[in-house]
Length: 475
Image (tube, rainbow, N blue to C red):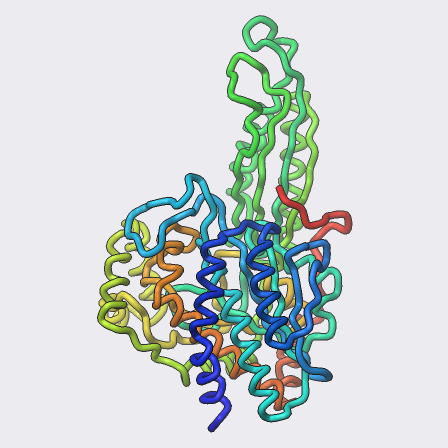
């Protein structure tokens, strides 16, 4: 039996175990840096499978590494398990039905993400034992991908320094190997401090922190015309200074996400936004505290690893769906927004061209391999980018939701325990495990990946965008 069939059989034999882990984590729905149950569940499972465990890493209580084997090469599988706020939702329901009002939900599929990477690691361990293969494999349980960039702390503290190859994936609506590019991203709190007073009786004695926030937001909005098209700046007022309009607000706060294709571009925008904040403080005679809490680097793709991933993805496709699963997906397509439906048409044309797009738009589930594009780009950000700066990295997407489903939505949460989601999870696990086997047993492939990685870096080194004094924190 060849390695692909062996690995596939191993994963299928343990399917119920992996489904149970994924579904339990879906139910826990724990936010960044508080994934205590999810992390413990995976640690206990990996310990029982014979992996050594290192936990509480880089100041992140829920971060851990499960390791097996010894020597080179060292292959890393990256997992995540954090949820998103405000996305609580009942499973398999085609209308918005929160389990808990304003509760957490797995709106990015991280219950699936971590479990597939774990499954790939376990399957490869069994194959290594059965065939007496040397080398080291690790599952990285990575917290706080959403909003806090947990992997960046692990990278900064050296936990990837001896890795040769890193592999990961993300749930989605398309089966494809991910190309170069994602947006680097800084998350920054701007807290303004003013002077409180009675807004009617003594307004001249007050200095409004909320005025400063609003002036800053206006200033940044004017900046948008004068930045590169690919950059993105978003904000949320996290503290408006209270709910009483007759009190001048003594404190107010806004959280910014500043994105661009390159870390250097984000740093430049960051300084400009800082100047705008300082200007708003001067205009209102308030003071501003600037606190960067997270940084994501852009993703460095690797065509060499992508080639191996693509070949394995092609081998394991199509997934194959039952009539019931097709009908399930159609029902969820009916409840996506009109904007999402319009975006699906546009996305399909970009994927396969205008003529072919008409065919695939008839499918509620895209059961095929999308063409690989080296410079694919991405409108989002991921802390996998930080890993890719220090280790040659490859990643794939697999179909886990009905075509057109928007990420970070209640529709994603609702589909997160379906058989469709589980099939996508198993596809990702098989692709990663088979690809890892190829790097584990072929030193030349490892060298090719490293050569490609160095060419992509083009002399640059990891920018380490996290300030030295920033530590993982719940905010």
